[in-house]
Image (cartoon, rainbow, N blue to C red; front, side, top):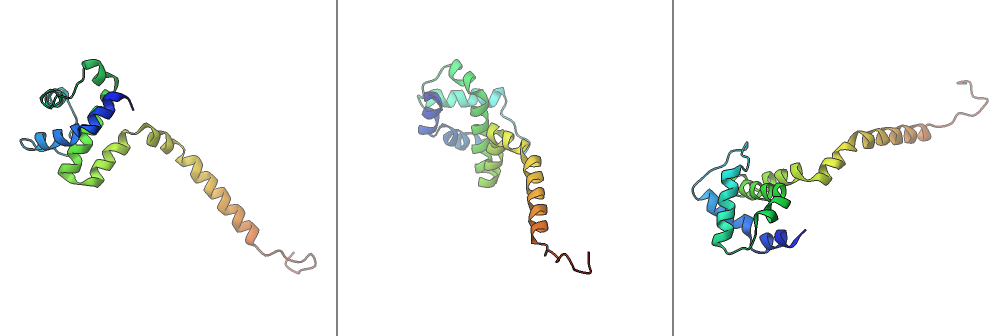
Length: 129
């Protein structure tokens, strides 16, 4: 996390923006942060004297948009919906999801091996052989 991101979090920029924005708007579940919303966010940063430049925002633009949307969804729909926004965006979660089929295969093989190990062995002179 860079100093600009830390500054936004320390100053509760996303929380304050959501309260400001939702005072005159509502959001639907298909809401996306567009240029108009970003400009309103920048205006709020200026109003609250949070230092930034366009390069600061450009470097973490997707992160800023995700946090705006996350905070709006928390306020509008609840904590769970805000968490969904964050996990949908998170590159580590996206990478982890790509491993799920492999993990399922490993689990299936492990279960098969356990099941085979648990089968009772029949004596060599058993009539079942």
